[in-house]
Length: 241
Image (tube, rainbow, N blue to C red; front, side, top):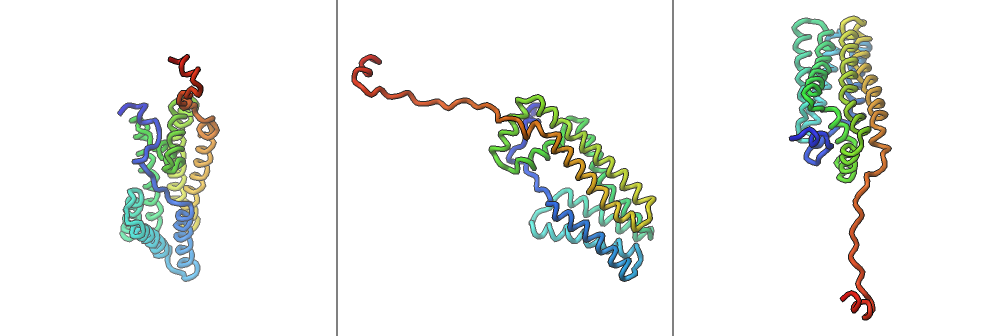
């Protein structure tokens, strides 16, 4: 496939089912709520509280699979990391291991996005396009036309991947530092809050960056052909003959 064909835009066979902000908020509130309820109210150990909160988040992923009757690759990775973090914490006896292992998803995402960018197979920009058009054929065609005809739109779209890579790198680095050096109760909050805050900034920057695609006028289309007018009088018919 040629490079310009890969960058044209979303196609109907490629669809992304994005998790809703409500679902993400439930995961964060669940983990923090369970941890502090067990540790502060029931006075359990920090390790037991964090393992329980992590296990409940893993069960929510399984419940979503059962409800949707489909499996998402990112959720498989998250579930694998949850299991690995619980096992590592059980072996080491340190609850911080759960927080550190939890940052591995950000590290893997950073490596994947960077590698795709170096290989000229951008991943973030196509995701943004598909989430924006939401499977609507008309919006998809308009987006494709603007990317193909407007150099400003193409430049803006090409900046999405470096922006997301920067955001993932900052979020992962800050989360690792928080997991290692902050007091554990504060680290639990920070490791949930930092990715959310960075994601909010990155999404706002993406929205501003794609202004040329949102504000560009509709691409010109060919005027529809009209059928020739039928002569109405006998004299007009004779002249045409």
